[in-house]
Image (cartoon, rainbow, N blue to C red; front, top):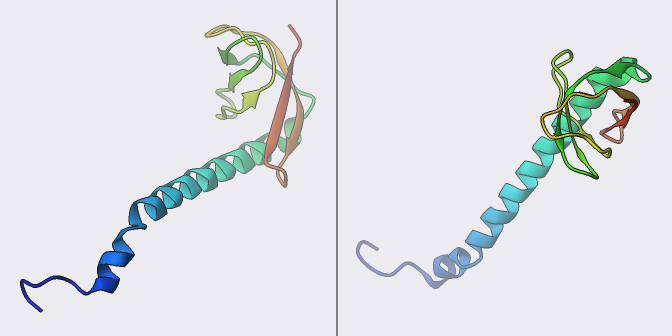
Length: 106
Protein backbone atom coordinates (compact mmCIF):
# COMPACT_ATOMS: atom_id res chain seq x y z
CA UNK A 1 0.00 0.00 0.00
CA UNK A 2 2.24 2.80 -1.28
CA UNK A 3 1.77 6.22 0.25
CA UNK A 4 -0.96 5.07 2.64
CA UNK A 5 -1.01 4.61 6.37
CA UNK A 6 0.61 1.45 7.69
CA UNK A 7 -1.69 -1.13 9.25
CA UNK A 8 -2.76 -0.48 12.85
CA UNK A 9 -0.70 -3.42 14.15
CA UNK A 10 2.45 -1.71 12.83
CA UNK A 11 1.64 1.54 14.63
CA UNK A 12 0.90 -0.42 17.80
CA UNK A 13 4.16 -2.33 17.57
CA UNK A 14 6.17 0.90 17.33
CA UNK A 15 4.88 2.37 20.61
CA UNK A 16 6.85 0.08 22.97
CA UNK A 17 9.94 0.08 20.73
CA UNK A 18 11.94 2.82 22.58
CA UNK A 19 11.47 1.04 25.92
CA UNK A 20 12.40 -2.31 24.39
CA UNK A 21 15.52 -0.83 22.82
CA UNK A 22 16.55 0.80 26.13
CA UNK A 23 16.08 -2.53 27.93
CA UNK A 24 18.17 -4.28 25.26
CA UNK A 25 20.95 -1.73 25.75
CA UNK A 26 20.81 -2.19 29.54
CA UNK A 27 21.02 -5.97 29.20
CA UNK A 28 23.89 -5.67 26.72
CA UNK A 29 25.89 -3.47 29.12
CA UNK A 30 25.17 -5.87 32.00
CA UNK A 31 26.36 -8.82 29.91
CA UNK A 32 29.52 -7.00 28.88
CA UNK A 33 30.28 -6.10 32.53
CA UNK A 34 29.69 -9.73 33.57
CA UNK A 35 32.11 -10.99 30.91
CA UNK A 36 34.77 -8.47 31.97
CA UNK A 37 34.28 -9.31 35.66
CA UNK A 38 34.57 -13.07 35.01
CA UNK A 39 37.66 -12.55 32.85
CA UNK A 40 39.35 -10.44 35.53
CA UNK A 41 38.60 -13.12 38.13
CA UNK A 42 39.97 -15.82 35.81
CA UNK A 43 43.18 -13.88 35.16
CA UNK A 44 43.71 -13.27 38.89
CA UNK A 45 42.58 -16.71 40.16
CA UNK A 46 46.13 -18.01 40.57
CA UNK A 47 47.27 -14.75 42.21
CA UNK A 48 45.08 -14.73 45.31
CA UNK A 49 47.32 -13.72 48.19
CA UNK A 50 49.73 -11.77 45.97
CA UNK A 51 50.49 -8.15 46.77
CA UNK A 52 50.32 -5.66 43.92
CA UNK A 53 51.28 -2.00 43.63
CA UNK A 54 48.54 -0.67 41.33
CA UNK A 55 47.56 2.77 40.29
CA UNK A 56 44.25 3.68 41.87
CA UNK A 57 41.19 5.73 41.31
CA UNK A 58 38.49 6.20 43.83
CA UNK A 59 37.39 7.77 47.01
CA UNK A 60 37.02 7.08 50.70
CA UNK A 61 34.89 3.94 50.39
CA UNK A 62 35.53 2.37 47.02
CA UNK A 63 37.61 2.69 43.92
CA UNK A 64 39.29 0.90 41.09
CA UNK A 65 42.58 -0.99 41.16
CA UNK A 66 44.45 -0.51 37.88
CA UNK A 67 47.04 -3.23 37.24
CA UNK A 68 49.37 -3.25 34.27
CA UNK A 69 50.40 -6.91 34.65
CA UNK A 70 47.96 -8.55 34.35
CA UNK A 71 46.02 -5.77 32.62
CA UNK A 72 42.85 -5.61 34.72
CA UNK A 73 40.83 -2.87 36.41
CA UNK A 74 38.62 -4.47 39.07
CA UNK A 75 36.63 -2.46 41.56
CA UNK A 76 37.89 -2.43 45.13
CA UNK A 77 36.02 -1.78 48.36
CA UNK A 78 38.89 0.05 50.01
CA UNK A 79 40.15 3.54 50.71
CA UNK A 80 42.15 4.26 47.57
CA UNK A 81 43.84 7.56 46.78
CA UNK A 82 42.77 9.07 43.48
CA UNK A 83 45.70 8.64 41.11
CA UNK A 84 47.87 7.36 43.92
CA UNK A 85 49.79 4.16 44.34
CA UNK A 86 49.36 1.80 47.29
CA UNK A 87 49.97 -1.86 48.01
CA UNK A 88 46.94 -4.15 47.82
CA UNK A 89 46.54 -7.89 48.30
CA UNK A 90 44.21 -9.94 46.13
CA UNK A 91 41.97 -11.71 48.63
CA UNK A 92 39.46 -13.27 46.25
CA UNK A 93 39.18 -14.12 42.57
CA UNK A 94 35.99 -16.13 42.06
CA UNK A 95 35.16 -16.76 38.41
CA UNK A 96 31.74 -18.32 39.05
CA UNK A 97 30.65 -15.30 41.08
CA UNK A 98 32.55 -12.91 38.77
CA UNK A 99 34.13 -11.28 41.78
CA UNK A 100 37.61 -9.98 42.59
CA UNK A 101 38.45 -8.52 45.98
CA UNK A 102 41.49 -6.60 47.18
CA UNK A 103 42.49 -5.30 50.57
CA UNK A 104 44.81 -2.38 51.10
CA UNK A 105 48.00 -3.38 52.93
CA UNK A 106 49.86 -0.04 52.79
